[in-house]
Image 1 (cartoon, rainbow, N blue to C red):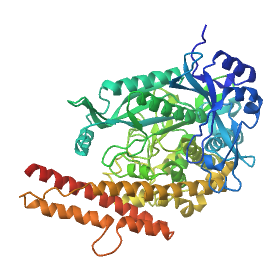
Image 2: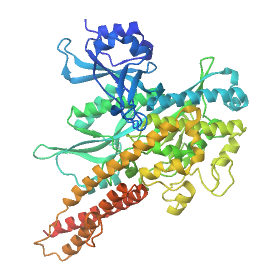
Image 3: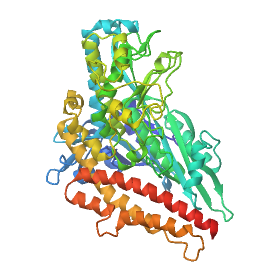
Image 4: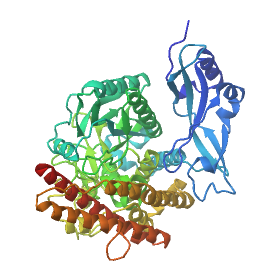
Length: 632
């Protein structure tokens, strides 16, 4: 009798004997893949015959599983061309996934050929240098330091209704919400149509239909089979209703969201990679393309991936207590207030790890429910939880469920490296916690500092800043007030990276406990800067040039007197970008020249100008084309 289908192997089963038994029962598992995650969030994938794994299973379980070199991972100035050896060490503390290829049937079993995905750490000179190992160190450091603080300051847990002697351990819980666009576009969909539907919120939580419904339902069902406990799947605000043209072609452009249950921090980050794989494969079978870009189209809703994080104390009697839950007269405990203060105070140096691509910055623009201001919302009253969608950090609470209390960081997107984002969140929270607990700060004192007005004295937070609001930050404050009170928002990857230089006094927060090392921060900085430059020069600008060249003059035989004027406005902007009449380089060439001269700040400034001009050009060309068609 054929054994039941297997989707994952739990950590409790990752012993030699149990693994050999599972592989014997499931001959459809023909390959293993050792999956490491580099500093850019890229997961390695390779096909190792399962027999090789079986013959060398002791090394896979207790030593180095595979060797590779720096050409297969992004670790600049670590895995160099003359020192590139990378060892891959299996992680037996998390689930190992079974990746099923439904397009390839095993001739012996008649089942899809499967690959056992083995999460691993990347080792260089006996040092773990990958994203998963950074998160592992952050989790261990956070849990260890919190326990030490409880032991040395037992009064700090009294308000939680427990004593220090009752505490056995600390557990970090985490989850992400994944938004994405599904596209199968055969007929042209006007941007105006998409934008109007978005403004009217016609698609938000609307009923899914056709292949989109099938894809969403199959995704949730497959997630359940993989033990990922989906909680909800629904349509997001972006997109229009799918349709079929008279010739049978489909037009699909819809934004969806999938949520699933929390887990421990490392497993939560691993789960996200598996969910993305499930989504891509499920929709691919329906001939629908999926993109996890933060901003796939200008003028349409971007895709976010809010990160949720909470902390619970495990007691010796088997019970658990939420470390952040406040009493009847507070939104949060002193631990929760302090952790939130740490998140906000240190965000400038954690932002480069969270918002690290050109695409991410296109999403984070004012007025789009974009979390661009370093400010939090607690809730208007203790009875009304925070639902402010314009802040960076929201406090999630449920007056009926103490375990629901957690923080929601709203700036990540689907391409954020979740391992590094979570690691920076933990380091930042711990900084605030250590400051507050060692100084004996209580809930009232911490809330007072969080509630400070710009200019008020502060011991931990910055005096000139404001850190809490329950208002819409885009309507309640002017641009000048936002920049002054919440910090000026970086406009590009380069400006984000410069925070490492602008806030040197905060950098020890990242390196405490050797979670991030200076070498890893330096390597990450090079990686995202190079990606920013290459993507801008060799993808964004060429795509803009292609778009500009498609903007054709249409009014040659038109009698409409306004056509020439409107076309000239378009032509002036096209030339400004590509070839000005005064003989000076266009904006595109100016960017190339700035990069060649090593002047990254000028390139960054010109990138912002380029986006503004392209936005105006699209509007002008749309106006020209619509008016011409009206008179044609």
